Image 1 (cartoon, protein in one colour):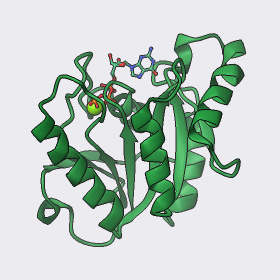
Image 2 (tube, protein in one colour):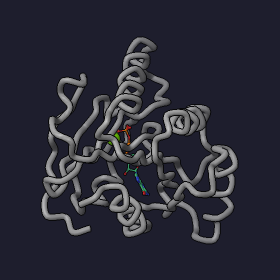
Image 3 (cartoon, rainbow, N blue to C red):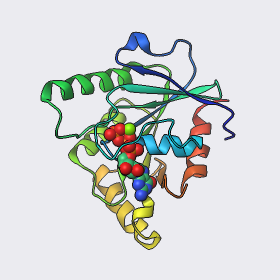
Image 4 (cartoon, rainbow, N blue to C red):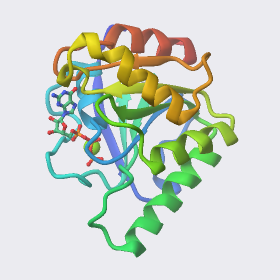
Length: 195
Ligand code: GTP
Ligand code: MG
């Protein structure tokens, strides 16, 4: 994918703020700190377009990024952040659920899990939930640079089993540090958006 333009569009807190029109949207789901914003930046070759932070829970809104004036990345709020009041958590999950279950423009969900760790309860719940709604998905094992390449298969097998992944679902080791997995992910994404 040649990136001709990439712009931040809006931090949406309610559906009325989602962009108009019917351009395809690719959403990113995953726990806080898993590397959603970093993945967006790497995919778009922009260092700081999506704000990243070592403090989890930074992204609390649906952040839209418009690419080549043709489609959007939608950075969803990270789940599983412990130090957030229950009422706020409930509000986030309602917003995420509503978006994932109702948004017609949504063509593909990138579910991010950290390659180093077994998926959390929330990761499993998210995967099941995406299945339930029949949403096309890709699972991305992030921070692949943090373990040696020889360890990838072993870790990915643990993730595959915990999520009970269907073998037909693409599963990509990815590193925002090195760019590992970037081309493979673009290939999957472009197959879901007809540009
Ligand atoms: P929230 O917005 O809080 O939900 O987090 P996020 O999922 O957007 O994570 P973010 O991209 O902000 O990354 C969190 C931390 O992990 C940052 O310190 C990143 O630099 C680091 N990080 C993200 N991806 C990678 C990666 O591929 N390799 C390494 N080594 N570090 C990464
Ligand atoms: Mg983020």
